[in-house]
Image 1: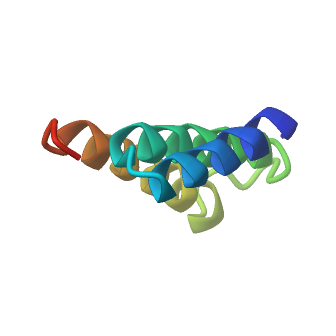
Image 2: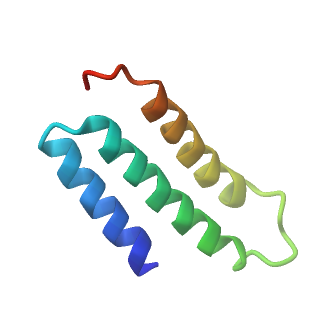
Length: 72
């Protein structure tokens, strides 16, 4: 969880200073790690929105960051 928080913080800082692609990728990795860490807390209820939605958002953010033009 600490690594995820650090990744999100560094991603926000990079985004503020102009490296939007790298910042978005770090934010996506951090949020994905947090979503996966929370996955085990929902034992027996794997098909609920609390499990899949945060992970889907992280994957979508990662895909969007990769699709950004090189200049950003």
